[in-house]
Image 1: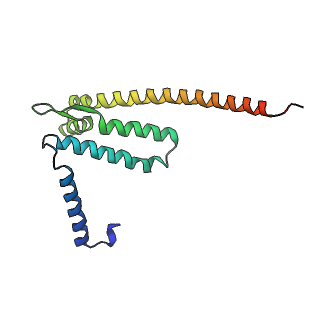
Image 2 (image 1 turned 135 degrees about the horizontal axis):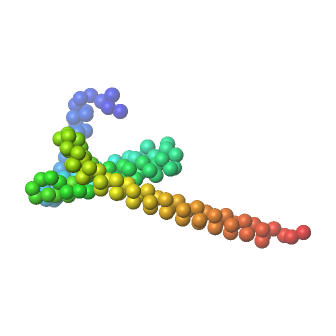
Image 3 (image 1 turned 30 degrees about the vertical axis):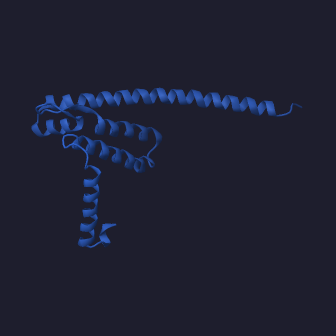
Length: 151
């Protein structure tokens, strides 16, 4: 898409995006801006994930939603003073950069909890769906038998 655009055109598009973003966050307090940007762009990533999920099998697609959601949106506290809410995945990256296993596992624990809860809820959802489908098939079969005249 950008292969046919000149540098001036790309600069104009980026300038318009920056102006749009500045107008969008004009009334947001500066201390809340990182949180709004993070949540907003996480939602954009999750919406774009729809394009990837379409080509995956259902089970893998559901699991990928759970994992992506857990990585992007699992909260933890930051290491700064005062501690603020921060994404747990950033804590994991920070721990990897510092080569500190305690920070890594403190960041991974909430992510793993979210993945586990998501998998359990997905399992319960599949069981309920199978029961509903089975009941619907049984009712459809009974209705088909009732509507057929007996000989």
